[in-house]
Length: 157
Length: 119
Image (spheres, each protein chain N blue to C red):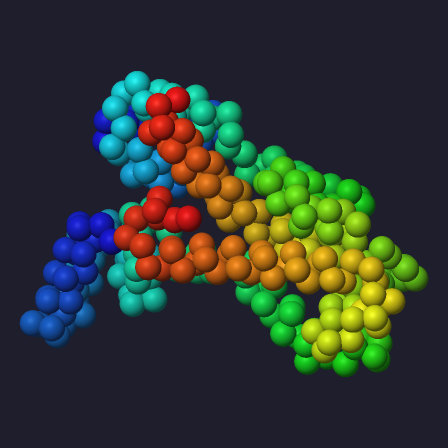
């Protein structure tokens, strides 16, 4: 965290504890951050920890891709690969009968349940896709780990 | 910071990227910094380009953004499955900015290593 930011937060907390009056904190925050009061409250809230020097809010730092891959694999693991009841696929919902990715999800689900041959029969790309997704999850989580633990973001792997 | 003026010469650089590079190149001298700007400027990718490549996925040519960002295996799977039946393309559409950031930051570290190694 930037030294100036640390000092600002410390001062705010100090003032809040000493006077216990929101008005004073409010005035202080306004003085520090200009007229964008609510923005500054968000920036100073614990959710914004660690505030980095690049001025990014916590919500824009959410690892969307990582969450997507992990939840996809989890959902597939707990789905029934032998049945085909519902689909998220926008192409099939739009009325197309077939697309080149059809059966890939079931193939990965079968692979995770250890049924290699059934997985190959469902879609031949299931095994490579699974390996590539695992590798991507590894890369993304390593990056996340470094973002949250290293002092400077340019120290990432 | 003194290195900001030189870094601002990189075509299409964003403010966040500038902040990142300012901290990453704080220890370089002026010659090294100029070499860094040359190397990094040729390696970096624009967010808008990646967005356009991702949009091509809706026409059936999915995964070009992954090839461009050096994720070849992922690109092949995207291409052969039409971006996991469009779902992957939609995720990439949401995620194109942070994917580009990840790539650009890796390129920054690579360029930094090359400059430090006496390019």
